Length: 385
Image 1 (cartoon, rainbow, N blue to C red):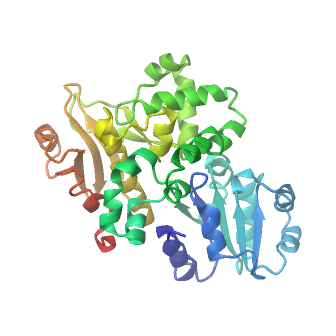
Image 2 (cartoon, helix red, strand yellow; image 1 turned 90 degrees about the vertical axis):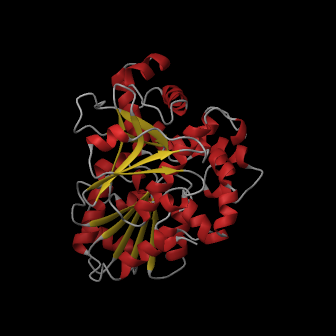
Image 3 (cartoon, one colour; image 1 turned 45 degrees about the vertical axis):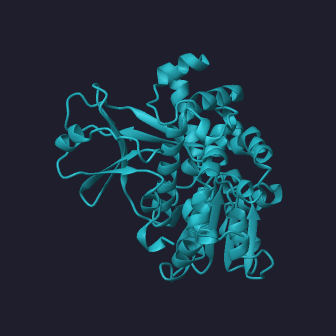
């Protein structure tokens, strides 16, 4: 098993930061990224002090759906640690977890879910002040460096940009196409297609293919709607659902100082490039592709996001563009300063002049990220190998 960075983070919160065990740990992320495997490693179901519930098992759902402290205690048995897996399938899961936390402070509760769809509305409102929230993603560059070494993982960059970082993909070389095909055809969209407001599953797939072709570019809801024969409101709603299901995520524009800055715009990235390339069925080698620059941008942005999440480092994230086509690929705001980045797959390529941005936002920093220095961007200093 490839060690996961989130494991030490969870252990830290389980121990030092939760001595009274009055908070649940909620771990959300895409399907097939290893949440259940990690929980089984930390809390084996064979342990007598661990009680497991699986939201995809009807009998477990029925037990947890009984909103009564005494009945819940009977269902828990002698367990001092409760693992609720696939929690998004359990009705009123937020109230269930709230009841457990409030009535049984001696019991440690861990909740995992493959989608934020139901959990977002059914859990968070009920869990204010009662949960620590974590996200788990496909494998990261940082994790693979820890597993196999920096130079080896760096040599795999062209492969990772094609096939992504899903654990089964990484550990099954030669079978990437079949594994990614199964993911994109079924389990990845399972939560979305089961959602009660999705009546046109084919439209979701058309939308994803359209978004896959626009990675790294600004996305216009009306223009995408025309491409897939839908209205902008439906496009926006489906994009929101896809984001909650951890398939894509949005980056919004920065607009504070200049009159000609583009406002209320967004770029969309994929959590995993293997899924993106599967959607458009394009696995041409990196050296021959026309979209290599966009893949590199997506790779850097998502790997940075994983690192920030696993290290619990909060930042505001943007891109910047003006109506005169001046632009910055990616911006972070932290410690009272803006940090701007341009992504170049070719280290010799000339970066755009950031002068207009630096004049608009004095004191900002600017850096070009290439394969020669990207490790400084996607790994925090104490994790470099």
